[in-house]
Length: 73
Image 1: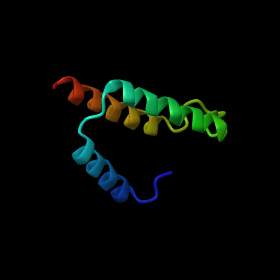
Image 2: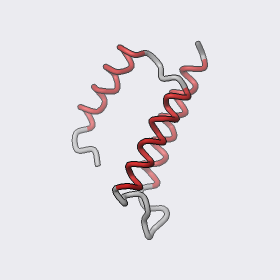
Image 3: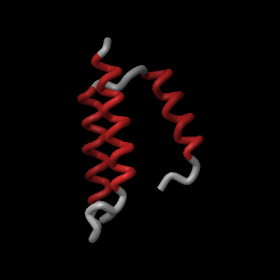
Image 4: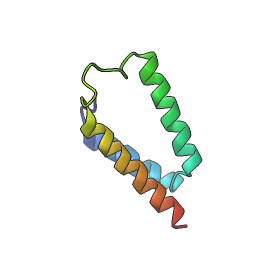
């Protein structure tokens, strides 16, 4: 859970400024590691399959925008 979104936004902005757009393969690798960690922490499965769908949609939008930005170059 993100308790201070402004700190996360600053981190993302600083990362983008220093590293540039993430290549698709690297984004996918990060996503795989995050999924593995969620499964290891038993935080992945839920009794309600729609629980947290808003977060999933936000993540999908961010990943899709990163993919579009990196493919424009």
